[in-house]
Image 1 (cartoon, helix red, strand yellow):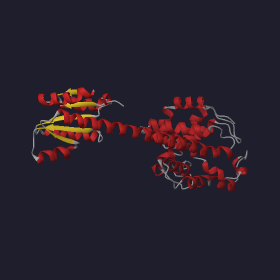
Image 2 (cartoon, helix red, strand yellow):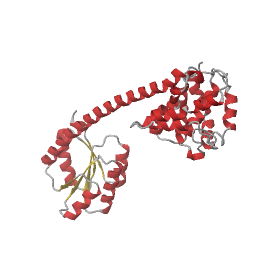
Image 3 (cartoon, rainbow, N blue to C red):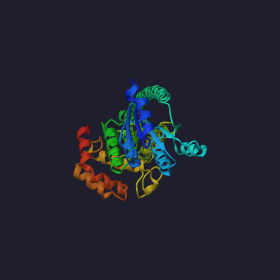
Image 4 (cartoon, rainbow, N blue to C red):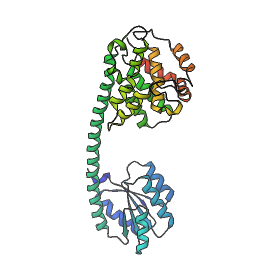
Length: 340
């Protein structure tokens, strides 16, 4: 990787130091951009993707200390060189305390500065290569984890033969709701991959109950309800954020907003947000899908039911968010149509 990839942004107020920096950089093909405005300096750092090093001339101004501190807070990894004629130790301590990486006492020999920049280029390239290798390794690990999550979610499908692509749609609806709530990309991804684990506890429910095509007896229903606790026990206690979220969802997605749900009869916002989201996604999809014990409902029937349960079964705020974005939910249905 060539030194050309090094980009320096220089807040410059001293003509002599400007010449020194150019004499050091031009022979080794390093880019230098100049500004004499504090505002432009910060805006350029925020807007430009590839700034490797910032040079700042310092003559004791308080504003310089503030801008260094702001830059450091914005990007702690950005290297900041301060160039100054001031020899006072207290001033240097202020500079370092504000977040500067190096304090260069002027005048600086251009050849010495050039040698420093060459070393920095080598270290930067090594660091960038290491970061790329780490990102690649993390990406592979994450991909394998997500594949494992999908396979785990499908274990409930294996037992419950009429769910088809139900778990995938529930994940997509849940991701949609989290997005419209203003959740981060990380939160959205968490719902996409954790929500499909909501019924994993069904692997512990007898087939005779799980696939019964008539109404369950009270005893059978009591057994069916234990899938929430079984799912929680399967998924909890790991170091995976997806499994941890899945455990919360498995335990709480049958709780109801008015406190009449199971297994813990939680009420309102005592029900974890993840569980409240998946409660809507799960019921919505179950109603529009055909099951061994019922025909599929029309979208209109399903939406009427969801509306009627706002504030009783479902969190009213989340229900409103979902219904406002029902067109996007319909697109999910089209891409993953329910099948018996």
